[in-house]
Image 1 (cartoon, helix red, strand yellow):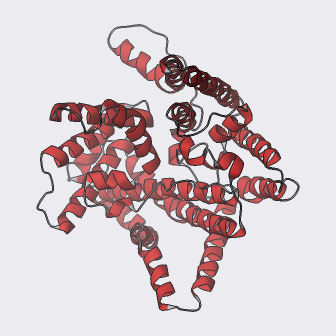
Image 2 (cartoon, helix red, strand yellow):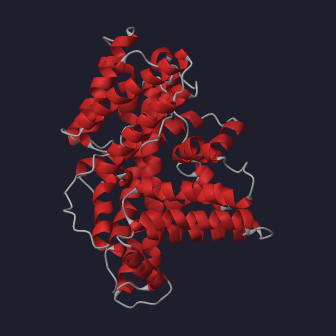
Image 3 (cartoon, one colour):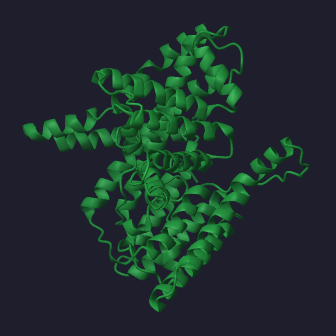
Length: 468
């Protein structure tokens, strides 16, 4: 079930809010059980059988959490339950996400395995990371162990962030499961945040996605430099507005139910270095790899430069692999590894003008997205060649056509990728302009109505990160 679908907006969400706030308002346990059932129903809507995988993950990690807690209380080593939890969770992820890819590699080396057709449960990387976060944060005393599997289930399966993040670490919401405080101010702020995310998704991401898909779908030939650049720019905007829009909707929905999630994006395309970009992009994923992989390896506080480079390599290899079973994702992750090492030890960008650092960072991110979006490494290479004119075809007319049809969306995408809107809002508030709140409310209502019209019309409506 998509947030940007009619069934969610006009049936599921109103019904869940109505039951949560009317008959269950003063009964926290009942609210939690209801949210768990609603979340499992939300997942089962599109994945009726894979909800069993979700339930198995909940029960297994509930047990691992109790095992860790028992070891801590008895003064025994927590290594056995931690190893078991990591093995079980990553094992499930491997079977569903990486088994066919691995068998394909082995077959290319001379083996003769039969490759099974295994469907990928939506959002498995996200809820597996959250399940692991529960066990690891209990071990690190960052959150109390839950005696009820229902509460563990609510944390892992809570529908706002279930299938495309943000990845909510257990320590962030451990206390909120039982002791959150709903307020009408939070509810209103949550509605506004949800609408902002819906607008990002429906009015910008979906529109530029048509151009990006057309450009990347032209194959090895027929792609002029202009159309290749337009497609790459559109995909760069699409993935930001698609994913940050979903995160905005998730954060907004959380607030409607009294949960406060951490931010997942902070205007990444204004970054002036690759290091800064990854402090602003998919913050929840970066934080998980930092806390659960990078720091345990020693981080940057190691005895030599080469050990630090090794740690960076492991993190960025895993970051690429986390996104999917394809060499393109691995190459994408390793490209960022190389760029970060060059920034740290090769002094890349030092002494450059600010504008040049920003432009270089944006270009590198754009090329990285080409690799990320391509179906294969050869396809990525051909696309990048086309961007530099080493291709031919009839795409020039298409580029001009799409540019004429979508220039307003592209302009909006560029403007709102910078913090123009919050700065304008803050400036108006500082000046004491009396109609700021009214303008904000009218704008939110307009965005919702126009987005709803597009949804009802049935326009192109994918979600990129559902595949991860």
